[in-house]
Image (cartoon, rainbow, N blue to C red):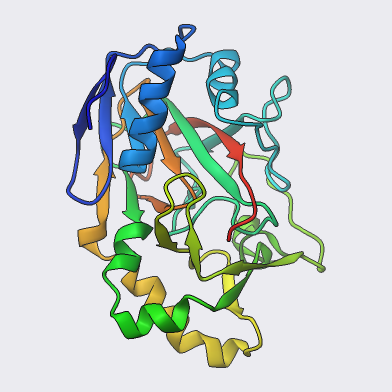
Amino acid sequence: MSYKNIDVQPVSGALGAEISGADLNADLDNETFDDIHQAFLDHQVIFFRDQDLSPEKHTAFGRRFGSLNVHPYVKGMADHPEVMEIIKEPEDKVNFGGGWHSDMSFLEEPALGSILHSIEVPSFGGDTLFASQYKAYEALSDGMKEMLDGMVAIHTAEREYGQGGNSAMKRSSMDIDNANDDVPKFEHPVVRTHPETGRKALYVNMAFTMYFKNMTRRESRPLLNFLFDHCTQEQFTCRFRWTPGAVAFWDNRAVQHFALNDYHGQRRHMRRVTINGDRPH
């Protein structure tokens, strides 16, 4: 794929590309924006270095792709509720996003994508892993694809944000609320068709997918465990080493990610905006 105004360098055989030649703090012309959008669709997650983004510029870039999400359980910045500050202090033991997941799959209309900007990074550790769910689906046998194509799974935030969930673990600089006992549940296809590329991707994740429709949790568990293990195999992944001012923009419709928690005693400060998506089909 050729691009007119940017340079795009793949970072792995599965997904991911680093982009140069674009200043996200500037008012991007339509041709450059179209290049970035196409690179996003082509590579599933794209990376930029040395971007001096204010919250205003961060949200402005995100809105070029759609309306922005206000997280139902994590409070955003006072003046910019769409901007989530993701902070791990030196004394914190638990990070945010430390497990394979797709952002906001617990909503009826899950996120299109997320744009993460690094403000302060540790001297080592704190990388983010990404896994292509296109590649995960394509690697399945024909028999498994045929079985999964008509299945539906139940997604909910109860494990992460319900009473006693993972969000109850202390993060000193983040304001995270627990959901009420009646956490909403939504049905999503196990295999979704990407609305822009037309490609099929697995759409289950360990954080928010609980069981299959018309099956018990016990009955669902063996197949879900297989899929959770399968869809994050090394050959489907790439890894991003953060530097100050770096930006990662990933497609939640076809990508899972995992924030590594391997920098205890150091501070990590990121800002995220999330673009609203549509109902999976």
